[in-house]
Every structure is written in structure tokens, then in C-alpha cells.
Length: 251
Image (cartoon, rainbow, N blue to C red):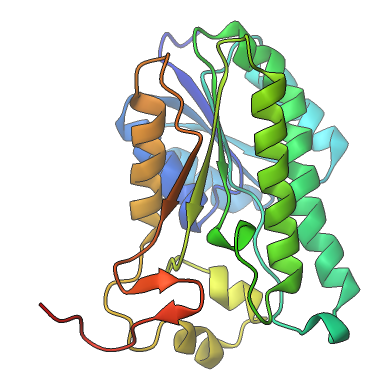
């Protein structure tokens, strides 16, 4: 049995999830690397000396297997699995895409949290970190489905914090703005590389997946009595969801 603190990161085969797994391993965590793609989670786990488990957060059997493998104690859970699909106006909504976003971002987060909560409560100060989004606080055109899912995920975080009051479990949402991560925009835009590149065109230094992982590492490193309820983090070039400076920054 490992004597190191343990962490589970969902959606850790790439992007922000992978960066979180790498960063937590650097801080001495024994990390469970989980995502749907078995080959990718094995690759990441081998790189960081962690543990790989193929998990689809929307599959109850996969989630139950994760809880059984993790065992009786867990120090950190990073709910990262999710993502966006499409930029359709609400009037032209792809309901299958909306359904997938709700199942992964909302129901997946609830399912994994529910399954692992007993192990988190068994730790001295178990910490749940949810990778949300500024889209969970401000709507924007073309973001109806993703915004709705992230608003709902934020409601889960806020409700859970109230319900866990009186326990030692901490819960935090990290809400990034513009992140030029490994595949977020490419997935959202159905593999259209040209359209994905335009999302970040002209923006000086958008956030990286490593920037978000650094925020996660800081939140979980704080003394056990300190809870960061929500951290909103944007690149300097982004003042709001609708206001992005697409030119070199000035002094």
C-alpha cells in the first residue's frame, strides 16, 4: 500500500486533466489517471508513475469499478471530464450534443463524486476540485448548451458545499476562461483545425492547461481549514467572455 496521498483525475488522457495528473504527481501524489481511452491513460500513468484505469464517467459500472479500485481513502478528486460540443444557436440546437454535454459535465461529475465521497470523507481533509468554466457564470452566443451544462455543474458544487458543511471535506471550482489546451476547441468544433485556430487568433498568451493545473495544485496544497470556494482565472488579454484583446498587449 502506498503511503503517499492519493488523487483521482478524470478526463486525464489529455488537456487540462493530463496536466493536473502530471502536476499532482510532481507534488508527491499517487495519481489515478482515468479517462475513456485506455491506451492514453496508460501512457500518462507510465509517464508519471501513476495508476491507469479506463473510465467513462457516464457509465455506472465504470464508476463503481473506479470506487472499488481506489479503496477506502482518497485525498483529492479532480472532476475534469466534460467538454463542449458545437457552437449552434439555441434555436438550432443539436440535442444529442446537449445531452452529451450534460451527461459528461453534470451527471458524470455527480456520479464520480457520489461514488468516491466515502473515501474522501475518510481522509483528513479530502478535497474535491471541479474544473468548471467562466461559461458557468456568463452566457454567450453560440454557447447555450455548454453554458447550460457548466451553470448546472456550478450549482452542483455550490449545493454540495452546503450539504458537506460540518465535515472536513473541501470543495472548490476552478473556472478558467480562454485556455489553449490540447483539444478543447478542436473537439468543440468537430475537428475543424482552421476554426479552432481562429478561437485564439491574435491573443497574446492565452492560458495553458499547465496554468490551470497550477491553480489546482495550489488549492489542494493549502492548510486543511482553508477552502477556496471558486477561482476564476483568465489570461490578461481576456477581460470577459465577450471581450478579448486580439493584438499585442501594451505597457
